[in-house]
Image (cartoon, rainbow, N blue to C red):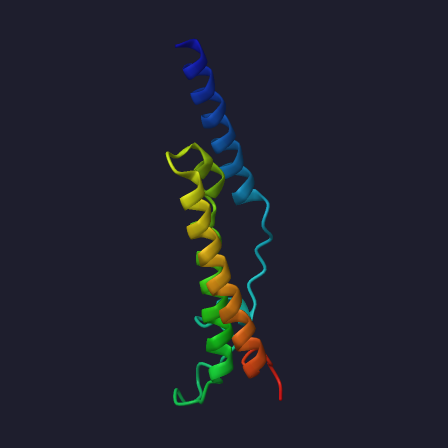
Length: 116
């Protein structure tokens, strides 16, 4: 019981210290860009019908795909404690092979070239 109380006290003190530091540390220098409701780099006063590059969306989707792959493969080290670890590693290898083949295909098709 004493250990749990100590852990809760340390966590609470650390949280309060981090909250206080986060309010004091940043410099508050508002400028035109920070006060703008749009921080994405687009002009908010222009037309909303600007064409976007599809390559930008392709790169974004590939990033999300490989980010998802990492999240799916994170529990893999605990797969050796399952009843059939070989099957787990075979499925993980199949996922990696399919994603690698897809990346190679995109690369060969020129989908990853940012500028032509």
